[in-house]
Image 1 (tube, rainbow, N blue to C red):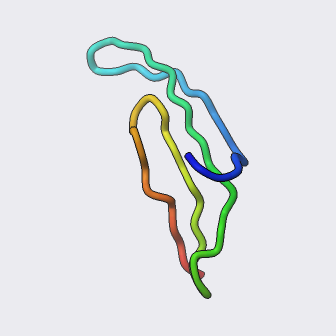
Image 2: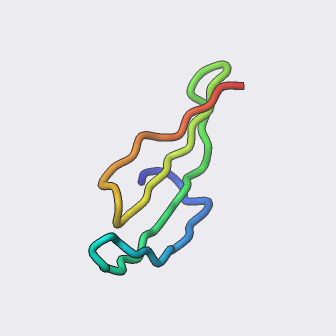
Length: 58
């Protein structure tokens, strides 16, 4: 994840195969995309290599 980290949580998971990975869920500082849209960088390390930023419009 790029940008300034504003929230993070580590979660103990359980896979269907019985593995117990620790996931790191992180959210970055929101940034303005255009006049009506904002986005936040997000990541779930241990599950996804890369996620698209979460985007919403007012």
